Image (cartoon, rainbow, N blue to C red; front, side, top):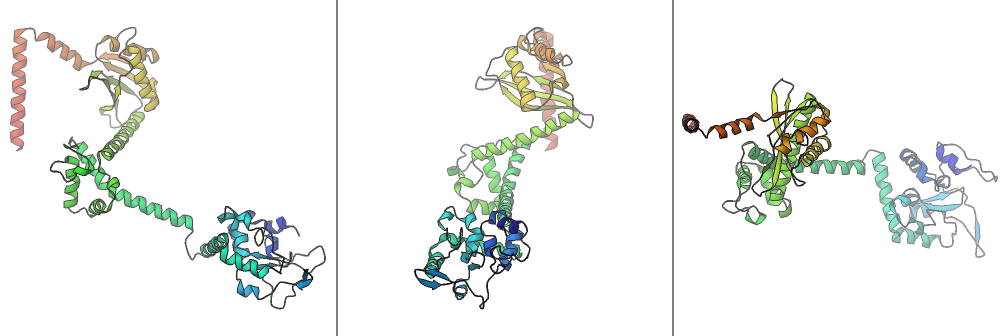
Length: 415
């Protein structure tokens, strides 16, 4: 009877040996010891529960060793419960090491006897069994693994992978609960246009008089009864409170990504869009170009949504700005330029130039992306030019005063 055949069909059957010796029991460990990696968990469990152990009346074969007749002793089963005897090979095996030794031991090759092949020298058997039981770390680990395996298969305990998965899910849930209040505070500051930072915003200054709006709002949540946040601030390590300026930036970036994804989803649903852009210098004297997309939402309302500032570090030429916008739309936002139906910029040559401006370059890619000079910019140019006339300048001064007066009346009525 071949070992592979018994592994592929491990159901009880009588194995007739070709050499004429007594039939081998179908659950003799000698049939499976060298093919454990090919067995499924259910097959391994079946063999473990029915592994053959000879009875007290079994006649063990006699071997001659150093001129003395020796054989396997039945009492070894009581002294070493992990022991198994193979009538097919007339040798002893360690059950847990045979089944799990290769899985738990990187140096399992050291246990050649009792695991890789049977122990057949009965003159040293007792010493080898004691050493194996007391000194082998692989044996101890394999024995524990076997006990856990049987408990899992009998549904007494959950599988280790399931226990680990549940522990991870529980920890993730706790972390999300802690972050919930911090994220809500960040969103509140964003919606109400409240700056987050104070004079100092380092971990050493959380107790300062003015540590910033964000820190003050978190402390206010704790004072208002947020026990989860309170316990988090009291017990968390100082490098894991999630309230530092670095975490604030990370949370703002996460919120920005979610908002941008939602806007892009609406634009893709609308399919068609127009581009609005204008370069301007910031307070650090660096050229920035805000990009706004205009589209019609599913309710038929016209929307204009700011998406991103582009740093014009490659220059302000029409070619450079075209590369920046095309990369932003097609690579970052995954929008197709063929669905662009309009462009709106100021009248500068690099933006509105007929031959090499930004508008003409995009128009050469998509002939339906028509350019329109920004109406607000044209109005500003018209007013600036008209103010050279005294009567127009006086009229604009009166309009400005009326606007301030109307706003003050409105604010007073709201108080």
